[in-house]
Image (tube, rainbow, N blue to C red; front, side, top):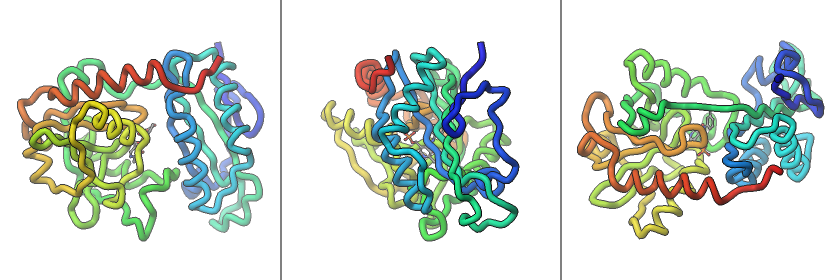
Length: 291
Ligand code: PXG
């Protein structure tokens, strides 16, 4: 059975889903995107993802050619068309087709693409054992150049960090901001536990305001786990009791080794386990119904 992909108002098969070589998303990384998940027939945090998409688009002066209500409906329709209940949804809005020249005025029709498929970031074994990650030498973009809050199609510095992780045989790369504070990973936010307190870098350090990150802060508060949004350094990270990453694709991924150093007791920590359990429960009960 073919996969149906929404491209500019039409559903086309995976084989037919093509974009122009003059699309500025392709030529210049000029566009925005979202990665969304559906669990058991419900889309998790759909409104939050749509809000972030429209905010990212506004920040780059990109007008999404659909209202938020229409786009929400198209996301749900794409899932129904593909008969999906558990899925990964990639929503891409690019500047659209233009010419060889970066002036966005040459692109009169921004393009909307919705792909709904499956995703598997890490094996179940890695979630049990914990990930081995590295600290990358590639820094985050400074907000004055490209604000990390914008979920744009420009992921090159994150990709460079990911290549460093690949070379070192690690699953992920932690990225620092220009001042050496821990910011986030290539596609995930980061949390540590210190003396029982859950700590995550404030968004201004240079991270995307992760939707999973915000869910975790709320779940921790509900459990009575103290939380703090506070900048921290490499040394604090190495000496943390627990560490985990959060993202729509990775969900909650425990980290047990950083730069070959063992974190805490070298296994998935108690607070991490609790939050994974609560997160999984939440994804099963909350969300926008597809059917
Ligand atoms: N930081 C960055 C740089 C991201 O790209 C997150 C943090 C986590 O945000 P959410 O809202 O997802 O909790 C992201 C999210 C992919 C993929 O295909 C990437 C993300 C999400 C889903 C899929 O690599 N990045």
